[in-house]
Image 1 (tube, rainbow, N blue to C red):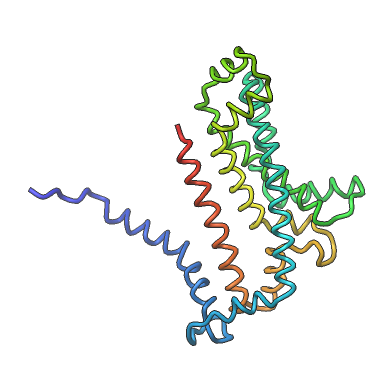
Image 2 (cartoon, one colour):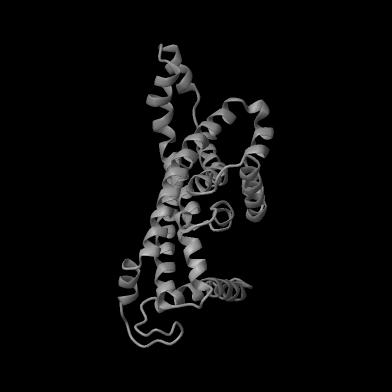
Length: 263
């Protein structure tokens, strides 16, 4: 006798379909319109790649993309190093772990606008000239907690007896970290770095508050914001599609690495 469908299953699938449709149909429309031949952003007039070629010839967009890449790479490198060391430090000093977690993970909980105002006030108080360097520092503060969280998830299942065995065999703390600890947690470190890179590429509010004046510190999200104020064009759709594709690729790779290191 065939199994009967479980009661309530159809309404659940209907709700899921509506929710996912509400979330992803606008994104699908944006991607489709980035290949629109006509200049109108909402009327389809044929397939074309000319707007992607237009992006490649736009010096302002290329400059903003380079700034974004610099900020993302530098802030990711610093946040990954500090976040990994923080995760190790918290796990090694578990007595004070909860207090340290509350302090370190605060940027994940605090609204972006509040963190942006706090960083702006801090830089102004120290009379620091705004620029790419202040955006990098702000993104390090923002990304640090995410890297630490990802690495700590791996350390939850870490066998600390191998570290003790390495020390008993005469290896120094540096050698133990390089030859024993780092190879085990490396997938989680890379996953945290990819997540930090993605967040840095997409981040707008903190960068907007800490960038200062001038185009020398304009990032890609800031450039998109300045362009969209005059109306949406297929060129903006193409730029948003590229940014989204990079973010999805980095997040997908990060999630795959997370699954490979899951206990």
